[in-house]
Length: 114
Length: 113
Image (cartoon, rainbow over all chains, first blue to last red; front, side):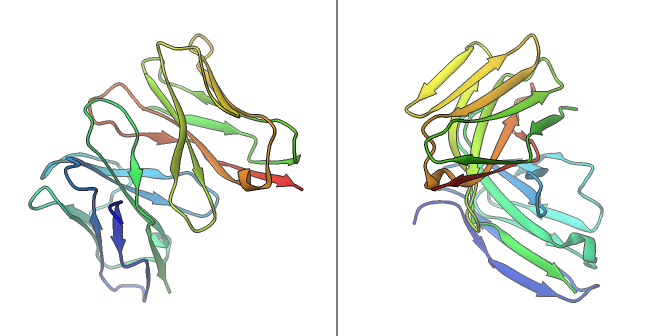
């Protein structure tokens, strides 16, 4: 499968623990996005990378959240000191084209914080 | 920033009928409006999109219309089939060079056989 892949698909953790999600975009896609989706809602933009540079962060992204894309390929999203309100599906998307166009989404990483 | 409102939140139609989902956006400079379909437990996938220099686009049973003056766009599905049952999201792309999308809240479409 040459689509966007995310790992793990499911994560259950206790409040206060740290979690890390990984996203492998489609090869040669230089743009990568993280979104959060809660039940019954549309995906909410969290952050955007062009190559290794993080160029935009949403106000939704508190200090407990950090994202990296060290070599401009895969990306990680870490949540420190998880809270129950962090429970959601974390979606990664990538695209190659400049300007606006289709985002290719991964299957998502579902986080449950107990 | 851009805000996208989507209606209705749920829609139930009989197989063969048409379905219409409507969205409004707030930033008049937004220039790209895609529609995504998300089946249960699956990733969102693009089904059709329209750019601000076009008023209507059609792809087989699916069409999208855009009214820039009123800042709204709609998805039309004709001859609905049970496999059309899913959650549909509209989105708008604000006028930046990031390509990010701002999504509506989603519409759950149920097509009854």
